[in-house]
Structures are given as structure tokens and as C-alpha cells.
Image 1 (cartoon, rainbow, N blue to C red):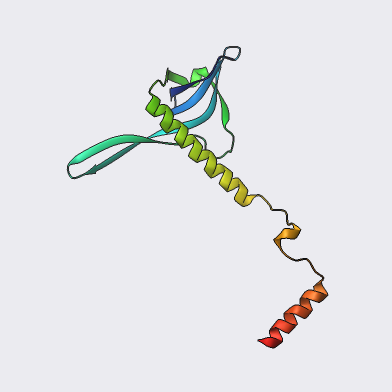
Image 2: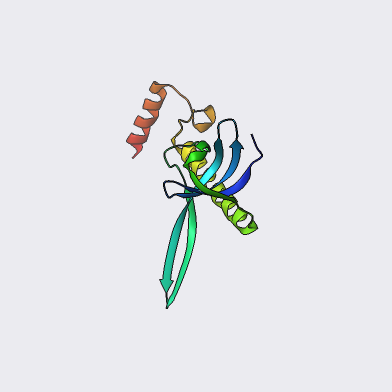
Length: 136
């Protein structure tokens, strides 16, 4: 596998993505790491129109970060040399990974430990709750 580099890729589907890319000559395929889809954005106000882009996750239904793309699906590809774009990509990927990690942590079952509360018998708990009810 060839060394990786940051590239902008235009696919035959019309999508434009930015990803760290490695070439696998034996399969004539690309390995994409953290691919982000480029979405155009336009804003106007006070007689000024501004165009730009945002980066969002390319495939939204998985937590995977690496994908294999056959080269036949690529229209064109160019290495990203602008350091500002490198920094923007790195920041977007970092935010995306943080969101995924937070999402996974929220929905993974948690194990209960003794430090999370006091353990006791049902009889003791019932007595404490009855006493609390009588005092109120």
C-alpha cells in the first residue's frame, strides 16, 4: 500500500469528498480514512453573496472510519496542499469523532458499581421508605 495523503475526490455519483487516501495497486482501489463529504453553502445579506462549503460525514449509517473505494468510481482526484484546508479537515474530523464517541458512550449499557449508591436488602429499604412516609 502506498503512503497516505489528503485528497479531494470527485466520484462518478457527483459527490465530492475529502479524505486521507492510500492506494492499493494490487486491487486498483483506494483506502479512504475519515472521508468527509463536501457540501456547498451560500449565504447572502446586505447585497453581498458568500459561497463556501462545509464538511459532513460521508456515510452516516456506520461508525467505521475506513472504507475501500474501487478506482473505477473516481472521476478525478487531487492532493490537498493548502494548509488551511488541512486544518479545517482535521478540525471537522476531530469534532465528528468526538460526537461519535459521545453518542456511543450514551447508548452503551453501564455497569453498576458499589460507589454508585448503597446496597441493602429489600426489607431494609422497605423499612426506610415506610419511616420516611410516616414522617411526611
